Amino acid sequence: MSISDAIYRPFETLIRPLDIPYRPMPTKGPVAVLVHFIAMFRGVVITMALTSMAIEAINLTIIWGLSVIVDGVTTQGVELFVDSNFRLLAVLAFLLFPVMPILFYITNILNSHTIGISLPVAIQWQGHKAVERQDLAFFHDLFAGQVASRLGQVANAVQQQILIAFQTAPRFLLQIIGSVVLLLALSWQLALPVIVWVAFNVLFAIKVVPDFTERARRSAKQNSLISGALTDIYGNIQMVKQFAAEDSEAGALRKIMSKGVDTLHHEQRIYRTTELVVISLNMVLWLVMLGIGFWGLFDRILTVGDFAATVYILQRLSAGSFTFLQMGQQIFRALGTIKDAMPVMTTPPTITDRPDAAELTVSRGEIHFENVRFAYKSGKPVIDDLSLTVRPGEKVGLVGLSGAGKTTLVSLLLRFYDIEDGAILIDGQDIRAVTQASLRRAIGVIAQDVALLHRSVGDNIRYGRPEATTDEIEAVAKMASADAFIADLSDAEGRRGYDAFVGDRGIKLSGGQRQRVAIARVLLKDAPILVLDEATSALDSESEAAIQERLNLVMEGKTVIAIAHRLSTIARMDRIVVLDHGRIVEEGRPDELVEQDGLFARLWKRQTGGFIPEDIDEPLPASPAT
Ligand SMILES: Nc1ncnc2c1ncn2[C@@H]1O[C@H](COP(=O)(O)OP(=O)(O)OP(=O)(O)O)[C@@H](O)[C@H]1O
Image 1 (tube, rainbow, N blue to C red):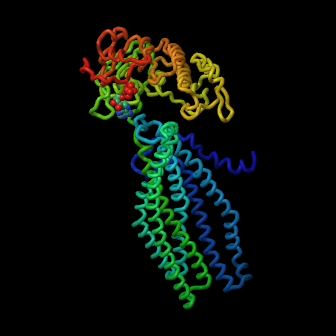
Image 2: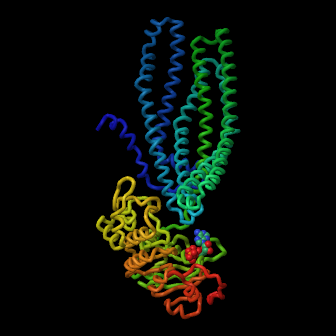
């Protein structure tokens, strides 16, 4: 171990931020959130407070010592003074070295390593754990970038607060109290103006400082809006470019940014005004104290040593008053920032596992929707008293006009939303009574818009089963006919094949290639239930034929609910369920439905290019179920 390791390692490993168990954040207010994080680091912050106070106590002792030395030397002469005060001088020297450097070392390393690095990481980690628990619906109302920037802002805010509360504030308080005591010991006439000056500063702070919180909250909000808007543009850059919308996006961004500048200016105004008042109070104190000092020397109430100590104390006090002001600014700014981010981190998720939630066990794979009612906004049902049983191993195709509720129905099966009425059962187990993780493990999904992470193609497939071996990944890729194109992949970093990265959301792959990766991923997951949300856009017919063939493989032996648009898929289903306005209006085998002159038959007649349309222009007759 190197010397540097020996000195720094113990502090670097004092707290392992990623090993702190997750605890939900309090919802009572920003101060409660602060206390929550302080509690995680209490040993460190208390030590830091004590060492900071010890440093200040030594500073005060040195000032007092200096006044004794100056007076002693001027009255007794150097030799006699040193002889008779040897112990005092030795103690002062010992405090200067080695005590002071050791205290500085401990305070600063706790400051930089623990509070500076481990604490923000712990906060971001805990914040992320809180955010990831949120329902899907929660994310629909937010910019993703805004959530991320808020976590970062809170980490900084809490860190600042802790440094102030445990390092600066105790030291500052001790400095003020110690200075007043020292001045009182010198003469009450010197202490009095300082007491009045402190009182003015405190009264002024009480008046202006609370306004900092609201202004800072507005600034934090504007900052997170800017990050959110930027992330939204970069995340959708392809669409922006397709519409040649760079200028209009830049225009919208300009508005957000210029509002941000106004808000920040407004926030800074109050700080500059406060500084002006504080510096004026300082200068008045200097004038009064120098006046009293000269008068004291003239009347021989004060010695030269007293006068020197007074000037030194004054200099420290006026520097301290700025620290006091900055502390006020930072504390209330940080509280504003925390307040702004609280809804993201402290809103309790509405979809949670029951305390007694069991693991879902799928033995047969039967799905039963029983009088299910659901609305995104209460009062306007999207799924309306729907009952449907999908038998084990059965393949059911959901068909209906756009907006009929097909996607919603499968989202309910995955419990992305909780239903208002009725029940959804899998093999007789209510999905609300089992853990969400076990439910979602039992369902494989191939979504319309295949989402891939910006990782290697191998890791994207491994998402289906993280513990899968490389051989298993290659086997499923082969089954999904993805092996050939994967072998040819390479990225800008020179990674090839399964190690090549796929670009943001898989942008570097074609639609058909993304589908194949998704199929491989689901093959690896091998869940007993499969949800297939078929893409409405046409792949070229060769890709389509290949993908259909692969899908057959995935569907083998599974219970399948497919949102079906392609005739080829519809033909392969055991049963078609036609949805309209959240209700089942027809069901049966495709050929039976074509014969009935209902919605399906009309959709069928209008099909083009192997697809059922999403909309038909003629008005619908009243559906049988309504
Ligand atoms: N997250 C949401 N919040 C609010 N309303 C929603 C949400 N998602 C869908 N809806 C509404 O619910 C209704 C059903 O939508 P859903 O996506 O289930 O239809 P769909 O049959 O899958 O349509 P499509 O075939 O066009 O995908 C629509 O009116 C839609 O506007």
